[in-house]
Image (cartoon, rainbow, N blue to C red; front, side, top):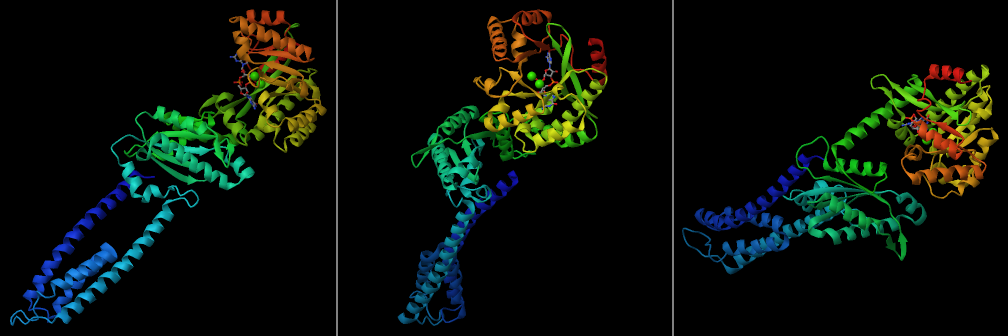
Length: 548
Ligand code: C2E
Ligand code: CA
Ligand code: CA
C-alpha cells in the first residue's frame, strides 16, 4: 500500500472538514445578505426573494432534516414581518403571505434534508460494509485506504508498527470444525490484543480468513511482539472446547518515508521468515529481503540446472573401521552454477526440499548413483552407494513406483544401494512410512537413519521400522574427544545399535584420536575428512581402484 495513498486520503479528509466549516459560514452569512439583497431590490414583490432557497437547500444537504427545516423557518421569518412588499411604498405583507412562505421554505428545507439524511445513511452503511469483514465485524483491508480512524491512527506522531499475523493450522480447524469456529477465534484474538494494547493504541484488521494485521502504537517492538506471542499461545476456548491455533507473527515499523516496500509487505516478509525458520515471531530486517529474493531466484533456476547438467554428484568414501577398506560412499549433490560457481547443498537443498523440486532432484541423484554403481560393478567393484532421501520424497505417492522403475533401468547389484533417511521422515505418518520402507526392502535396498541423535527422543521406532544402519550425527563425533558426556552417548548408541542387530556408522570423523575412540567403542564404519572429502567422478574412481 502506497504511503502516497494515505496522504491523499488524509488531505481529502482534512479538506472535507474545512469545507464544511466554510459552508457553515457561507450559509449563515448568506441569510442577512439575502435579506439586504431582497430589501435593496425593492422588497418581497420581486422575484429576488427566491434567492432564499439557495441557503435552505444547501443547509438541507449539509445538515439534514433538522438543519434544512431550521434554516427554512429562519429564512421565512427574515423575509416575513420585517420585509415590506414594496420598499419604496413601505407596504407591509399580510400575515398569511409570509406565514405560508415560511411553511414552503420549511417543507423544501426538510424534504432536501430527509433525502440528504437518507443518502448519508446509505453511504455510511456502504462504507461500513466495504471497510468491515462481514463475519467478524472487524476492519478489513479496504479500510486502510478508506477509513478516517485508521488514516488518523497511521498519521499519529508516535511509533506505529504493523503486525502481520498468519494462522498456520487454520485448514485443519476448518476441515474438522467448520468456518464459524475460526471467526470466533479471530474475534477472540482481537479482544485479547485489545486488552493488552488498549483501543487507543491498537487497530485490528481482518484481511482474509487466515491473515490479519494489527496496527499498534509501541516504542519497543520486541517487547510488544513477545506480548503478542504470549497471548496467541494460549488455547482459544470456543463453546467450551479448547482450540490450539498456531500463528506466525511478523512485525515491521510503519515507516512513512517512501521506500520500495510498504510496511505491510515488510511485516508479511517477517511473518514468512518466522514461518520458514520455525519461529513464532520475527521482526523485519533488510537481510530478510535479500535472502528471500535470492532464494526465490535460485529456486527458479534450479529446474534448468538439472536439465543443463549443472548439478553433479560427488562421492564421499565410507570406511570399515576394522579393515580400513572402503566399503561404500555417500552421493552428495553439488550445483555448478554458471555465475556463482560451486554451490554447496546447504545453500539450496533446504529450499528445494520445501518445494516439489525435491522429486526431480532425488530422481536425478538416484539415476546418477545407479549409473555410477553400474560402472563400478562392471569393473568388479561392489561398493554401496548411499542416496539421501528427503521426508517429502517418502510420502510422495509416485515415489515408490519411480524408484522401482529407475532400479529396473540399471543392471546393478541392488544390495549395493542404500537410502539415508532422517528420523523426522519416519514420524509424519509412521504406518504408511513403514509400508513404504518395507517395499524398499523388497527391492533389497538398505536403509540407514541419517543424523541419528538429532531428532526424536523416542527410540521405539528403531525396532518398528526395517532399518539396517544407524548413522551417528557429526555433532556427537566432533565433540567426542572434548566432552565426556558425549563419549557415553556415542558408546550407548553403538551398544544400542548392536543389541538391535544393526550396523552403526560415525560421520564427520576428522582426526585420528576420534577414530581411535570409535574403534575402541566398537563402531563399525566411519566417514569424514580424515579419510577423504567428497570426491568428484574421476577422483572417486582412482580412490576405489587404490582402496580395493
Ligand atoms: P548429510 O547427509 O549429513 O551429509 C554429510 C555432510 O557432511 C556432507 O556435506 C559432507 O560433505 C559433510 N561431511 C562429511 N564428513 C565431514 C567431516 O569430517 N567434517 C565436516 N565438517 N563435514 C563433513 P554436504 O555435501 O555439504 O551436504 C550437506 C547436506 O545436504 C547433507 O547432509 C544432506 O542433508 C544434504 N544433501 C546433500 N546431497 C543431497 C542429495 O543428493 N539429496 C538430498 N535430499 N540431500 C542432500
Ligand atoms: Ca546423509
Ligand atoms: Ca548426516
